[in-house]
Length: 329
Ligand code: MN
Image (cartoon, rainbow, N blue to C red):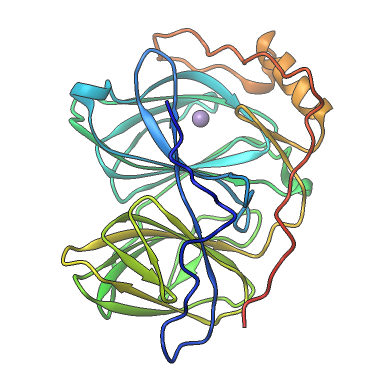
């Protein structure tokens, strides 16, 4: 599978809209990543990438579909581990059956947040259901801060109410936006919301100026603080602005995911399904998964074998952070 990434260090258009504060938006392009395994599903990954590791504590953004599962085979991810992170599953279309070592058996459905806390260790399987013909959504990860990265495994489900905006609608699955607040607790301040924008509508949202933000466009053509974003691109806005203006320049309803949080200052290592702080953290997690340690528990109800961990590189894994912070005016 080839990458469609061009040069993430050179955003395409940095021009602010006339009369607006010069809030600079970086365009982070997606790259195609095959998930591997028995099925052929490919995702568009915008985090992490060379130019950016995190937005707030958001550290992984995979966007997929709309896929005809008759052609792609849909999703079938056998039991695999996580440590040091939370997973956020959010669907636009389709249905995924989730089973984990906490004993949770849940169905991920459009407009419903399913947040799984890996903490010290969890394992889970994810399979699109037989009723699913089109699979379309995002899979997001949140890095846990040092003091909570070994927390107990946990799971939250929440169905946000649709919040009308002047020109669109919001579903706030984590944090606060547009007068709505998700009841789901987080370990660092976070924002996660689906925003739809009516054709040719402009919406201005109040932001927490301490947060940096990312806007993933699923559908439509959207200007983020004046910078055009195409579908599958992620726009990045540094901390500073107290408002964000979004314009749907297309004739269809635009759909986006808005993510935010204060810059995550810790450097992390992401390797396979693990987040740690040192090479040793990763080696230990991998070894414990491979030998079937209690650390990750076990998943019942998935017919497949556990996914084996890949072979570690010969090099020493080193922690990564973001490029130096740049405040927007
Ligand atoms: Mn997973």
